[in-house]
Length: 203
Image 1 (tube, rainbow, N blue to C red):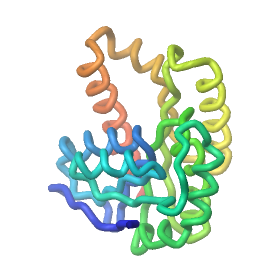
Image 2: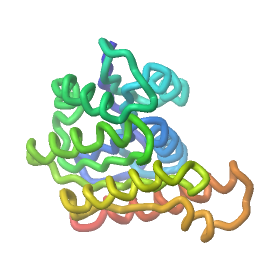
Image 3: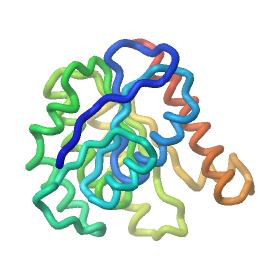
Image 4: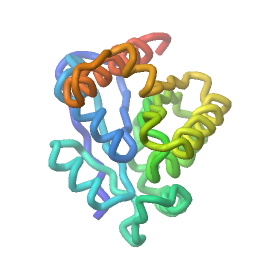
């Protein structure tokens, strides 16, 4: 069943702010935000993969499940795009009352790559100011995946001027050799610091 709820943290951010995390990468980032932000903020993890929704709910995140009537394929971004367009009414419900939308997704996979443009364009159509942050996958995840992600990021910048792009290779060089767990935590921290500044500036 599609679910749209709200989640509040402790602190203060501009009224009506929503962070929408798309796909598995979005879920992991929202998990970090939920645990570390001192600010009150509404967060929703959005996925077209039922396993991804279960994972997000296991993290205690509010979820928006798109594509209940579809068979999910983790390797086909076009299917995620079709799913998002078919379920636009539930996206609209998630965006009700939103005065500032921040979207986070990892590019190069299925859900984030396939559905981010649908959600961005819908929000803009509804007159909601949008900020976007995306990650470019590590080189070891494949040349084609990085190439696709870089092309998507460039296209997003054309539609949303306030788009932040985090290249995982570059972040890894900055963070250093912390090991996988600590390294990703440090990367999440750096992204959140940048995004929090973006969310609280010029609103």
